[in-house]
Structures are given as structure tokens and as C-alpha cells.
Image 1 (cartoon, one colour):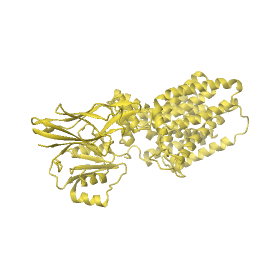
Image 2 (tube, one colour):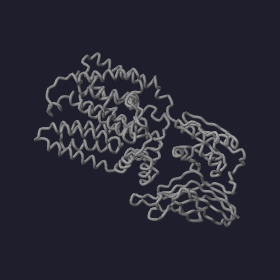
Image 3 (cartoon, one colour):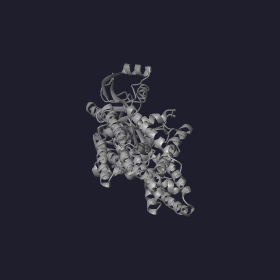
Length: 608
């Protein structure tokens, strides 16, 4: 069936509208999950460019491009999760258009339209088009790079070489996993180079070098993240089992049994048609001009390398079998299925198969999973709102994931959030290392209530559980000491001004809430550590300390975690009210050494 140009454009427009609706609708319905909060923290437009760069490098093994683009749109449209999710949704819609281009170039316009349709309703692609992570961008750049590779092989001009180089370089700026796709592309290029007539090889190879040069130039900003990735010796993922790819393919299509059966049938038909093709010849002109053979070579090499290399790497070293890393493989699968549908000779059967796939995908999306209404991500925002309402006394919040909650308490900078498990918190109080004061313990991400028998006995004997809060995949308990009388004074008479974890990646200021001091002599004890272990240029992190705007002392933190406490003695000449300020003032980055500081606590007590 030949489609007139006008019909093609009309159908493509309808497909893109459908894709946009499915990706924009309720795109901010779900809460952010752990990694999305990391993205929001790193892309915060209030960070300096230096802080931005270091934040991404500290938390992620991913190049900066996606975070930088989010930072730019935050500057224009506001720093909210909705803005970031809309940006990802737009990337997702463009990804649908990109797979149309790829299907058209590898096989036909009809295959491109079928591919765009299947991707538009694919639940996996929709979900990552509504997530503030770079996987939609990895899919987009990979698809465009393969598309430009196909164009370049057919017409190896300088213009096409540059275009191919640009999108290949962008893959490397999206995610480290793109290296595997680029390796598969290199094999495809070498194969077609070998098929070229000798008289044309030099020209083809020269333009290949132009593509490589453009890609490497664009990849320069991603150099440091890639160096970090190659140094990884262990990862949080366990070794894959024998069914790893079966599970992955099921996840790509929403675990729908009926949909998977239909798709498998189409792929088997595709293989039957391809393998049943009669032998003709193997020269460049024939292969580049035969859409069946040309597309099969691309798909075979792309899929084989993308699946085999990570599996070998995962068994021999650090595992990298995370389904979302393989999102570009989804593009290859969609193209394979689309070509299979197009190869069906009977038009009625062809349309029936396409309608079945689309219908099953939409039924799974709207009915089986109830994707747009069912809560599936941790409700940090809702629980944080409850905590703010119930925590009027600003009691300390303790959590295993202390780097998540500050995002939800950015409007309460005085809120103390400590990184501890419940076991560590109880043990610290029991041993006198932590104050016996009221605290909230919050846990989430599938972590259940967990405390040893001894810890539970101590908690029951000394604390009362005053309140319990619960939301989806997150809970909080409020513990108040049975002997608590109000101000959290320690046995030695000291009182905490700050208790938590505050990291300084560059010069900055910590300000406490306002405190009142009577006339007299005081000790201010500062617990913190300077990094790295070997002082940079022989000097540790330095703080100038003020009270009520007046300098009361200066201190260098220790580089030894076991000796974190420093003491400053000062005299308050009259009763005063003000803030304790700790000003980090000697940050330096030199010869790949970065001097940083981490504060754990600040407490004060009156001596006389």
C-alpha cells in the first residue's frame, strides 16, 4: 500500500498528537522518586555553575547535558517538578518523531508510521517521558544517530557525516551506556566500508573520520563522567540471572501477556520472511538498495552488541543490567516489530495486527495498570507536608536517605535532618553520642521498620511513640523521651544549635536559628570533617565563626573522622540574641584535589 505524501503527513501529525497527549496528561501526578530528586537538586538554578558541576559529579555517573538543559528551563519557567516533567515529555514526543524517521530510512514510510504508532502507545516509553531523568534523551539521540548513520551510508557526503557525528556525540552526553550503541555503529560502518568498491573507500573512510572528529569534539564535556564510570569496580546491581532479558522485554511492554504473545508472533514472522529471502549478491549497491537486507543488518548488529556486551561485562565485572539503561534497545525492537507488520502481505490482516497491538497497549495502559490514576511512587511530598504541620517544635528528623528530604524542606532551612538508620540513632542515644531529645524517624523506598531486640527494648523503656504517619511507600514515627522536659539540654549542660549533615562543596555560610545568650563565658563545640584525607596544599577546611554578626573565633576542621570536634571559647559581654554563623572561606580545587567540608553538629554551653 503506497501512502500519498499528504496522507503520510496527516497520519504522522495524528500519531504525534496522540503521543503528546499520553505523555503530557497528568505528567506530574506521581511523586518524584530518589533519582529524580537528585536531578532536581543538581539542576537547581540557585547553584553556581561550579556547584552545579560538582553536584552532578558527586551524585551521578552521568554527563551534565540533561541537568544543564533542565537548569536553563528552570531559569525561564520556574524551578518546579512540573516544568522538568514537561521538558521530559517534549523529549519523549520528539523521540516518537525520531523513530518515524528511522523506520522510514531503514525500510519505508509505512514502517516509520507503524513504528511511531507503536512507540506512541508504549507504556515504558511513556513512563520515562514523564520522569526527570536522561533516559528519554538517550533514546532520542540514539534513534537520531542510527537514522543519520543510515543516511550517511547511503549518501556519504560531508554534510551527512557532520550530522551523524553531531547526534553520535550527543549520545555520549546523554548517558555512558551510549558507548555500546556507538560500538555497534562502528561495526556497521566497517562492514559497509569493506563492501565499498576500492575506488570509493578512501572517500567513505575520510568522511567517517569527519564524523568521528565531530562526535569526539562534542563528547569532550562528558570526559570526566566517563572516566569515573570506567573506574567502577562494584555497583548496586547484582549479577544477572539466565532470564534477565526475558524480564527486560516483558518490562518494555508492560508485562502484558497478550501483547507479548502478539509481538512475538510478529517478530517470528519477520524472521521467517527475512531468512526466506533468496540469495542474490553481496555487493554494496545490492545491500544498500535492498531494504530487507539493509534494515536486517542494522537491527542484527544493533541488538546483538547492545545485549551481548553488557551481559559479558556484568558477569566479568560490575553488573550493569538495569532495564532503563537499555531504553535504546526498545527502539530497535519497535523497528523490528514495525517491519514485521509491514511485511504482512494481506492488508486486512496487517491492519488487524496493528490494531490489536495498539488496542492491547492502550487497554494495559488505562485499564490493567490504571497508569494515570494509580499511585506507584513514594509520596514524599504528602508526608513532608504532614511533618511540617505536626512538627511545630522543629524536632530533628532522622532518615536513612538524608539527601532526599531537604528538597521538600527547602522552605524550612532550620529543619535538622540527620542521616542515620533507626538502629544507629537508638544506639547513638544509648551510648550518649546523640542527644536524648524528641525525633522523627522517616523511612521509605521499600524499607520496613527494622530494629534489633536490644534496640527495641531500649526504645520502649525510654521513649514514647507519640505519632505515626503513613503514605504510599513512606512512613514516619515521632519518638519523645519519657524524661523529656522541653529544651533538649545535655547532661553536661550543652545544647545543640545544629545537628545533621551539611556539606560544603565551595565557600558558603551556615546560619543557625536565632538563640538567646546571657552574659558570660561559653564554649562552642563544632563537629565536622575536612576532605580529602590528605590536606590540599597542606591546609584543611577553615571556618570563621560569628555570633550576632561579631567574629568569635576561627577554626580548621580535622581531616580525621574519629576526631571531628573543635572547641571555640568566647565571652558574651551582655545578654544578646542572634544567629551562630559558620563561614567556610578557603575552598580550593587544584590538581584534581578538591577541599570540602562537612558539618555534623554545633553545640554550645555556658562555662560561667
